[in-house]
Image (tube, rainbow, N blue to C red; front, top):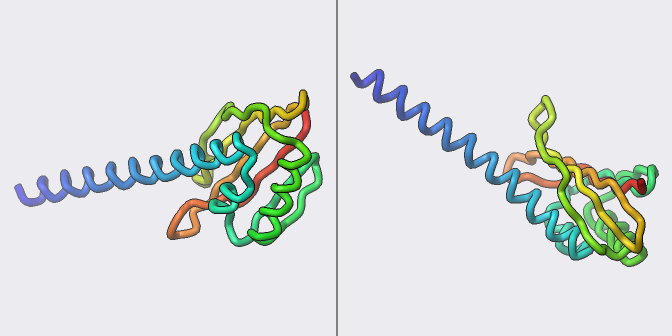
Length: 133
């Protein structure tokens, strides 16, 4: 009886852990979506890893968190958001969460790709791309 009770408790704990991880991934994607929607590099910076890959129109560069914030600030200044929607979100085979979105600014449309990484203590943006369609 104790064996069955122990297995049930372990199973419940595992389900709660998986549910909580999924919630944390979804929460950061929602927060990043809102920051992009408003064109706020300051808000996005709250979710950037210490080192982040930023791609703008096919030009990928690795930046520190602070540098990436300034690069995104400049992008939003030159391309203020009209709208932003998440088109798809999921996780890679390795379990890294990602989101793909559509960013519209002044009639231009950009495909946005955000890859998120578990840093151990929280989920942070590892890569963000804005590629003009």
